[in-house]
Length: 571
Image 1 (tube, rainbow, N blue to C red):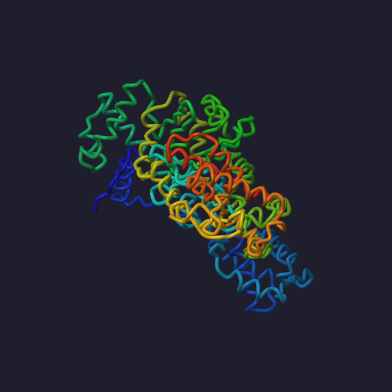
Image 2: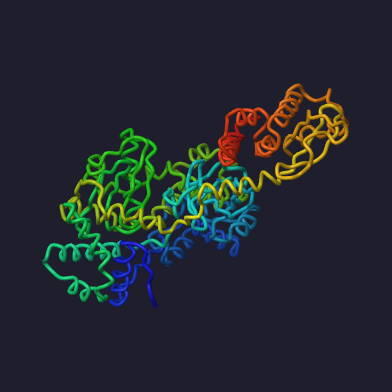
């Protein structure tokens, strides 16, 4: 087969993977130790089958299985006491036995699957009003907030607002925007990333004249042409007087808007390091640190300036023995932890399966569960499934011993190469004109109810249609245009032709709408067709001179986004 590589990192990673595969060096599997949810499931299965179960015998059986071979008796009793407190089973301390309760069977069959119970959120495109996809709850909990950007169908989207079961999004114009999140790739192993660092070092040797590209190519088992493009980047790095990050060198690069830690450590070690660095910066008063990782770098951004020398100090000061404690501390305030503890709480029976993150006071739930097996299980799941604690510890020990150098420098070709790789992934067709054309099409076909303020006659019209803008009965030009949302609220009164029973504010809205239609014709209809753009906002938009229709559509789009973001705060 053939490997299609898009970037500097991809090429070197592919070479490293092929060589390791040929040498039989496969990635090590790390099964979870003592998974509490599985333990709960197993205890209840055995209780249901045997009705009364001796705890000592249960402990002996569990210890014979690989996942629970290190389980301590104290830990088992914690789980039993916790289940007893939820009345999922009963425990007799005198006889040392556990029994099922009325809740046991219901709980067991409701939670027999180990797959997380996740809701999905529909994605609605603001310009067109169409459903364009969906996101699972884990991603929403970990990342989604108004203003966040992500990639869907090769296009960058921005979150406008989050509703009960849907998320309103809008495409970002232009192809140069780099999103905060681009997907969750298969993690790159620590040893693969270290080999990429070794290959970078070999290419640096070619630049410095200690070996040839032919020698390096033969060493790694590839044709010389494969390494030509990455060699040019390494060469540029050296020619600019910059340190090449390898398996033995970490560089911290300070740019205008970001600090990049270049470290060939793989996805899961980078994840662990990033949590500690961001957490330490937060404690030092640098709030709102946004983190982006890949197997070879950690990118740090903040509204407050992140200084490279502070990052170097944090890296050099990380104590390997304190790693787990620090990670537990910083993870407990993360959105990922909130989702994980909700999943655990559902599986253990603390909260209902149908409950979502937005239905709960998560701060209160976390406070209630702190110090319990549920809290520890949520932390352990993240540590064991998302991070490589063992190799992170080894990496920090090598820094401590001086085996790995940490250098501070300006932005470099290798450090910034991730940006080019990202841009290759983005669909360039999402320009602003395309977005505005979609909005215009929707606005032109949105049905509006026309109401004559003179004789109270009603009829349907749209900005793009040919229906008259004066009353077909009395020829009055005092005609209001109502968006479906407004008409729904006034419908009863308008059907009875009883304007007097309308509220004072609704009568004012009708009058202002009629003034706009009389003054601006179909442009007024176009603006009033916007979601959440009532007569007051429409009057503000139309009061400004717009050079062309495109400028008018931009103003409508801005008003729609403002409404979508703020309507949850309006009565």
